[in-house]
Image (tube, rainbow, N blue to C red):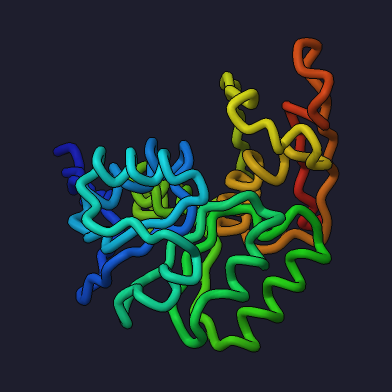
Length: 238
């Protein structure tokens, strides 16, 4: 008996880029912008029209490092002088998001660095403000668009690994929490500023759970921070 031929799989790995690329205006240019946002924007061919950071030396250095032509002197100046079609990339501590959004012009596009506030009350305030101002806003949950995640979805869609009934994510990594001193005062900081990516990832595959069991613990060398490792179990019923 002749063996059955196996058709090769075509695995998608790239996110779909916009047809009309808009300029980007950064509000806050800390470590995540230097290490992740700007290198990704350059790779994708996205233009950075300007930036603002309250640390003027940092702002100027970032502009020189990445070839950004415009450094705004204030948030108000960035809001009023940004290109009309610009996307505002807001990368500030979560507690400051609401204050930044209030100063942005209405009916504009905004990408907000996670988390959506430091607590549920702040998240609701951000949601209400975005709706009141008519902002087209999104929280930067980029992990669901990572190449390996797109590849996994492609395999699932083709039936290559069968139907998905269970999902487990295990992360063992060193995170330099000392780079962000403000996190020392944030309750459940590890969940809000790190594990939130994996929470969103699981939701993107399996939908919203009916509940979550969570336990976050401290590291012996960082007892000042409210948790640096978390175990999460998503409850989807029976």
